[in-house]
Length: 569
Image: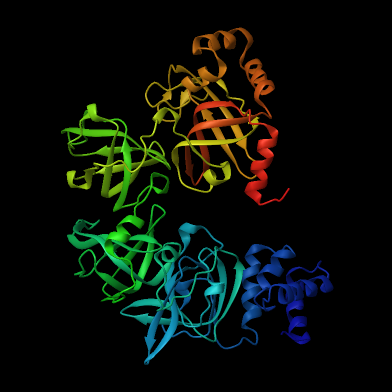
């Protein structure tokens, strides 16, 4: 802790550049940084100077002068470029980009270490930052969460084959200046379930049975060659997890393996186990472990579990429709794609096939099993993609009674929808808390169907525009809210009017009158919505096929709330 003499000296330096400042107020500001933020007074010099409105060109000079007077051993820098290869006891403020823990053998002993990326100039423009690797030898995981800004003290520079990095030593001090995300779990050589592994980031150890595997080739982005990889899926009783192996993988489906030091990475928010040449893989023996047949059943997904980007997916569904269309691709080739609608008790989705399948539309609906297929987003919701005929098997026995597609809606709370992935065939309820001012007749670009703003399209400029009808609300269930959108057909059904009749109302009474009437009729009303939910980083949007007033009796609603929250009447 800084003594009175040091504080007096720093206060005098501030008063040299800010003669109108009160000495006692300057002292209190230094003490506040020291006591509340644990920042040494010398390191707080720049902030204190700015606090008392010292000209920016004088701040750096005064701060360096304060640091150089009686400076302790070591270096305090702002940028990585100021460091030399042999620098020790370095202090620098950085932004933590990644933090990956792992267990490593050091001099014959297991040690918990971590590595990742940090960037200098954390308070400046992100385009003016330099990124370095770092290695954490001191178990500082709690203070090095990705996204945080920290001050590192007592670090040292390491150089290997001309590349420099920073060592955060056991004696180093890490002060958090801005909180980031959740702290990263420490690595361990003890195996965890695949369900737990999929929820983590970084290195993990797991035991699982190989369910599928296939050899593939990846073309390098720079076009310099190809990389052979093995992709597949492993499973245990908690679930399954896709993997990609960048080294040799000689284990066939059905083999029970222990994978130590695999890295969990995410592809479109789907966890994937990355296996490198440093990952340890060995055959594991456990007579009590579930068989491949048992795991094939437990690792089967339902439509409600599908996420954009998932690979090697297996599921059983009811195929309700089937058709094909031809198109010309970017290379001028004529292609055919087949598609249809799938249902299961958890929801509905689309399926697309890039190969002809032995499906007779006259025999629909039928039950189909998919193995090793991938999932892509179609109109914001998951779409199963089939690449090979071998991925599809028609089932002789029905796994459930045939589902009526017209009446099949899976009920979710609005909160569950907004906190999960995009889905089709959903039903939810809530209260309309806003009627948007752009309800009614709108003008769309004839080229891209975007809404015109003041007669212009953001993509194509001034356009004549085509009339369309839509309604926009905000739905709230007391916990979460989402935008609610009705297209022309759904709007006509709700209003009991055709678009032409709504146009007449618009032309006669004006848009403002129409919106006010909608607010009088629908604001504060409880409704039930059926359709699809699109959930992304911008929030949740409900696309309604049907919207109606919620006529559930009050007693039944209260009973449902008590059941949901476990309240005893």
